[in-house]
Image 1: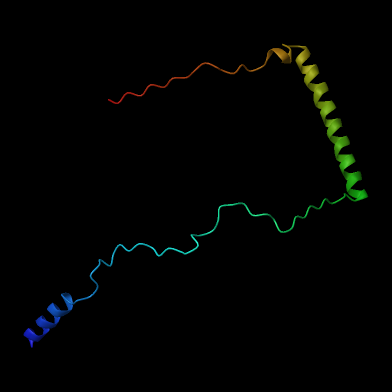
Image 2: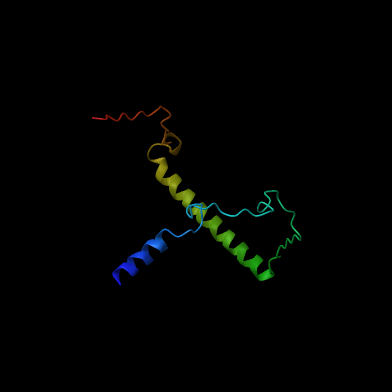
Length: 107
C-alpha cells in the first residue's frame, strides 16, 4: 500500500505537463495596443453664468460698504498709533537673499 502511494506521488510529480515554465508568464497583449494617448475633442461644451438676484446685489453692496468702513477705521487707528513712533515704511522686513549652505559630516 505504501509502495502504491509512493508510485502515485512520483508519477504525479514527474508527469508530462507543459514543457514551458508556468511562472512568470507574460501578460497577453491586446490587438489594438490599448487606449490612444491623443487628446479627444469634447462632444459638448456648456458654460453657464448665473446672474445675481437684486437682493444678492444689495447684500453685496452692504458688505462692501461695511468692509470699506472697517478699512477706514483700521487705517485711522494705525496712522494714529504710527505717528508717535517710527513710520510704517521703515519697518519693512528684508528678505535674506544670500545662499545658505548646510554642511553635513558623514562621521
